[in-house]
Amino acid sequence: MTPAVFIDRDGTLIEEVGYLNRLDRLVLFPWSVDAVRLLGRAGLRVVVVTNQAGVARGYLDEAFVRETHRVLAERLAAGGGRVDGFYYCPHHPEAPPGPHRRECECRKPKPGMLRQAAADLSLDLARSFIVGDRWHDVEAGRAAGVTGILVKTGYGAFDADRRRPGVEAALVAADLMEATSWILRERARWA
Image (cartoon, rainbow, N blue to C red; front, side):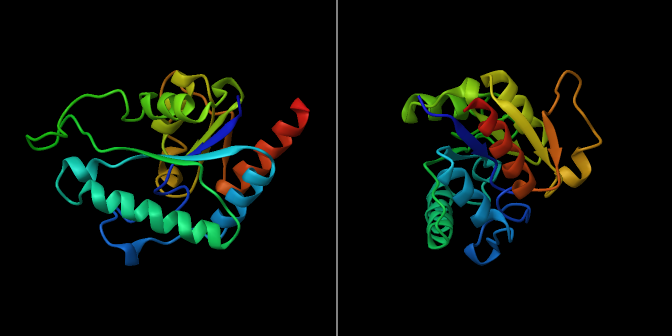
């Protein structure tokens, strides 16, 4: 089984723009390609895990989410980065009535996406990490037995000082690149 780095999408890998509903609004942070490439070269699987409540709220559809992930994968690959899997949750319990209005196990802070990726990709959750800009990312990691890192990009600029009771991050980093450097140092200690 292989360790992985689960990366939140909006606010961590790409700029936070609210509900991303047009591809011209998809902007990678300057360090994202390098971070993904470095993680892959270190033998870590890279998996994007993202809540997409905009689907449940009717702002976009699942086909657009999949197209966004295809374009994101292409942009990362152009710089030598590889994403091994994209997982998203289209549900929200407070959405308008419809097929996506429900409580589920995949919406962070629940660990469903991480567990599904682990089953699909033979990932070792105990040796894995999650990086996100919200405490619910860290909480999802904790629930799955994954080391959590909060970044101060996206909502993290505000959330870093609003800790959830009982949820601790192994690191609060400036951005994904700082988190990647820390992960690579931790990984070197395992060897």
